[in-house]
Amino acid sequence: MRKKANLIRGWSAAIPAGLFLPVSAVAAAAPAVQGAVGHHLTFLFDRFWWLVLMAAGIGLLSGGRQRRRNPFLDGDRVLRHDGAARLSHWTHAAGCVLLLLSGFGLGFFLFPRWVAGPAGAALLMNLHFCGALLFVFGGFYWLANTIVSPWRLREHLPERGSLVEGVTHYAHILGLTRKTVRPAKYDGSERLAFLPIVIFALLLIITGFVKLAARFSGIPTGVLATATWLHDISALVMLLLFCVHVLLGAVVPWSWPLLGSMFSGWVSRDFARRHHPRWFAELEKPKALEGDET
Image 1 (cartoon, rainbow, N blue to C red):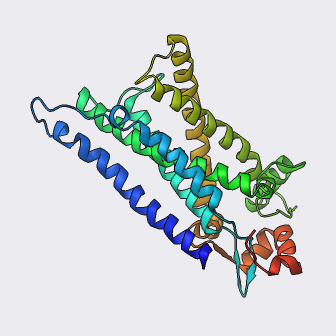
Image 2: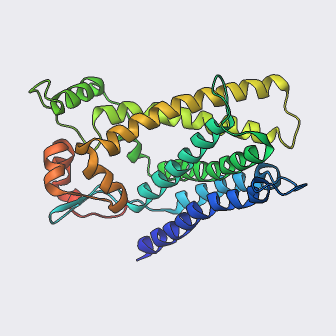
Image 3: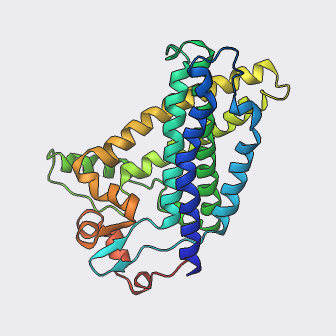
């Protein structure tokens, strides 16, 4: 019951926040967008910068207290993603979408700005602020949860043969080879994508904090320029990784059961047996059937 209550509280906080933050950003810039003469533009990064630090702290505290649940078999279905995994995934994903859209809208490198005038820039900056809150919370929540459940990191890390497994897996799906592989919970391509996603998400957060600090304290010009350059490069890489992730994880038909599990937490027993046989074999062991929290 305690675990269930923790998850309910987590989702109860995350869902309203995910809806409230973008709406508040639009509302903060609405008078300027409507053309109110002499309206003082509100930049949330200037007025409420401390909320970004608070999002990191709340993520660490809540992620560190959340107990994880092992995958287990339950009749004709298998628990693949527990509530903690889904919470960190969707807050991080929502933040990533807001950051990428607003960041490109503000323009960088050779990409032109999508809006003209200070009002439009204020709106995008405020949306960027909301994205930062969700992205930072999701990242620090995952970090704390990984620290208290370190064995879960191993199922994401690349292993010997991950590249060959990933290529063979998709070649078989596309009918280019009859050879099959026996993926664990995550196949080779997912394992290979894990480290770049973590590294560039970390770079985005660190350089984002440097850019945030520059708004209210003295940061050397060279340090700020380097942080900005790394921030922009990381955003480009994250955009590419995000597009590939969405394509392979949500668009192609064979990924739809896994997409459903990111909402419900469950996949069918038959799907797990056919598409992740090594993982399914582990679940059939007596210790995995218990489904205890760890």
